[in-house]
Image (tube, rainbow, N blue to C red; front, side, top):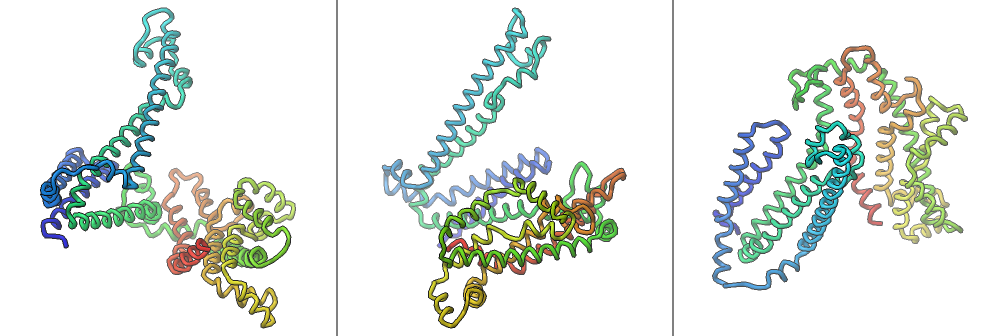
Length: 463
């Protein structure tokens, strides 16, 4: 159990670290130097005040035990020690690259300085060289290699890594024995770990969600406020007219219908083709099965930017440009979904298939009545992912749609900027409003069906 003294120390230490973290927040937000210095002094003072409360009992216990040896052996038993050694090696490599950069920088500078001086006094610094008419700084910078241009950055990174390694080694050597000597300190460190995990989770969540937050609040701002030099995290005045203005400027209802039609057709075909192919690759027995499956996996490595030219030529020759078929046809089959479903089908014992055959089921009834119910979470996950991918698809619809009649919502939002052509200021706030309307269905779909996505993905990963 933690004593009141330890609890007070935990509160002081956490408060101190919070003050130091606020400095990282205050620097980009332009807080005054006095405020930043005050937060730094306060944070260090709180941490120093917490140390006697936290370490007092452990230090007294160590004194009673007397001198302890084998500290290096104890440190090497920790897996964290190996990580620190890797970081130290990385710092040494960065230092070596930095030294190489300095040497090449001086060598290159000496050559250009000698040419610029033309027999006169050689300049010693870049500032002196700039005063010479024969010194061309552009040519000098072009002759520098990457290490010579960035040697100061390499030294800074190396110094930062070495500082972290030194602090961690000092902690393992001097603080770790104190923690081991006091059971309550280990409980306190468990509290620190939980707080650190929560803080890291909150931080990364905020980083990932901030663009969405910025998009939403920007859709309620005026154009002047959105383009202001100093951004505001909350609208000074909520402008609700942005959303109706977007609906008046572009046929969003048509975009929505086009997206629903193409997305639903793609989802059904990918699911149907995926189930059929996965059954053949998992339960079928034919020559070359594994080789064909490797070809399917190979398709995962080919980006759409490589295949879109032949696909576009094919769609053009079919006279399917600016049609639903042009959007749907290249997306009828997904190699990734075939892989996921095959892995799931392989986990189903063959005895269930044999039982279905004894009941007189054919292949299609076996798939529908046996495999699909047993792999329901993965099927739902595949359907949701297919719907999300189809809804958010931008590259291919952008290539094959030419008019409002067939544009999807992702392309329609991008086309909003063209509706402001000729205006003195582009209405980015209305563009943000259109983007918000485009993502609302996907966000709602994820919130209501996220448990199926997590379950299906975990089941597929464990097979």
